[in-house]
Amino acid sequence: MRNHPLKNALFGLTLISLVTFVPWLRAARPAPDSTEEERRVEKAILVFQEIAGLADEGIPESLLKKAHGIAIIPGVVKAAYGIGGEYGRGVLLVQDKGVWSNPSFITLAGGSLGWQIGIQRSDLVLVFKTGQSIDNIAEGKITLGADASVAAGPVGRGAQANTDLDLKAEIYAYSRAKGLFIGISVKGAAIQIDAEANERFYRDDEITARRIFTRPDLEGRPVADRLRKILAEYLRSDYTI
Image (cartoon, rainbow, N blue to C red):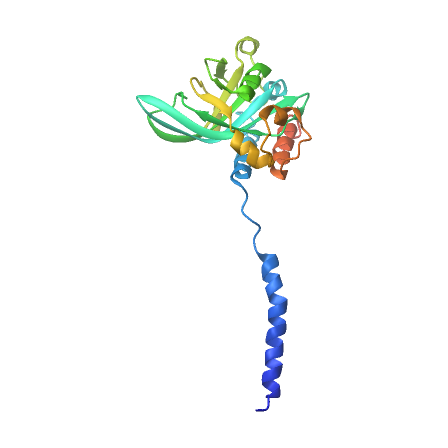
């Protein structure tokens, strides 16, 4: 049976199209989804960018410049009826002479944030005034209000932190309520290192929080570098989102 010239031509065009199109499909395939830890850092970035956008209600620059560290815990879930309880996962970074460390992953559990009865989600930011509290977290965990004094933080980017509060409080706490970040009293909640998340993020089974905090050159992920950059830029007067 003789092959038909037109059929042969159509077959050839189809084959060429497939050879050309299939690699394009592979190239156009979306990149693998980001890891859970990368998403946690992305959420922390969003929370801090919202703080930066609040000229009158943001964290004072003077407070953050003198801070030893900052914890950003997006989406803390609180369930309360008589006795309250919270749970959240976030990141903790330390500052040394204007240079921010890579983020260590942390968890927050227990205690009471003073919200109303019910189930709520809120973003929590903690500014650490002393290195001792961060050292204690790196070694195990701390309970806010028991192992470290905590107070509602002053608000307003241009505001100056009260001298008396500087001497008494180790940690200043902020929570987002109705789009604004306000100082809030936090007591009884425990913060500890999320070692498994650190191991996954840094691809190192022996990574420690102390190494993360003391090695700014530690190889991390682009999203971690972006968070560090945003924190550094916030302290500049020309900061823009």
